[in-house]
Structures are given as structure tokens and as C-alpha cells.
Length: 86
Image (cartoon, rainbow, N blue to C red; front, side):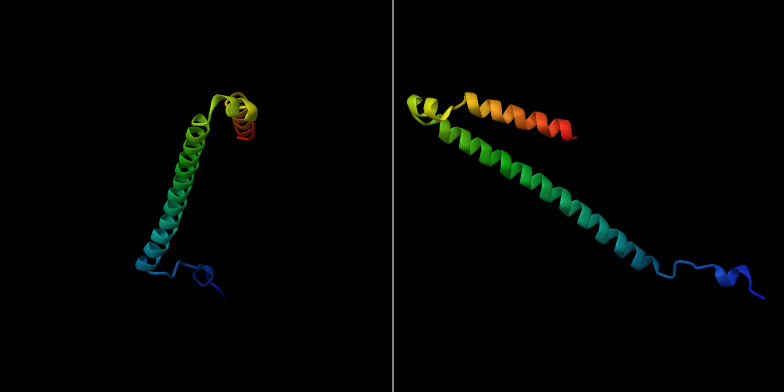
């Protein structure tokens, strides 16, 4: 005759093991957040550098490549797409 105790499965890991798993999971999550923040920072820094380089061009060259009108329109459209996906 079986009893309920035979069917019961307890967590056999020690407190230290459970704590280590929690810390590893939290550290992985935190590292992913830091990586995402770094990627955003790098992207914005690269964008500012590009804008500064284009602003340094002579007026006639900027007009030929559509700066800043075409660029601003593309950025606006991109941001609208990002907002519609969220």
C-alpha cells in the first residue's frame, strides 16, 4: 500500500544551490540590460557623430544629398514604424 509520502517530491537542492541559481539568473538578466543600454548609447553616439559630420559639409553638398530634410523625414518614418510595432 502506497502512501502520499512516497509520491511527494520535495526540492532536494540545498539553500546554497538555490541561491547560486538565483544569483546566476539575476546576473544574466542584469548583463542583458546593461548590454542593451550600451547598444543604445553607442547607436546614439554614432548618430550624433554622423549628424555633426554632415552639418560640417558645405551647403551645396548638403542640398545635393537631401540633408537635413530627407534625413529628418526618414527618421520620423522609422520612429513611427517602431511605435506602431510596440
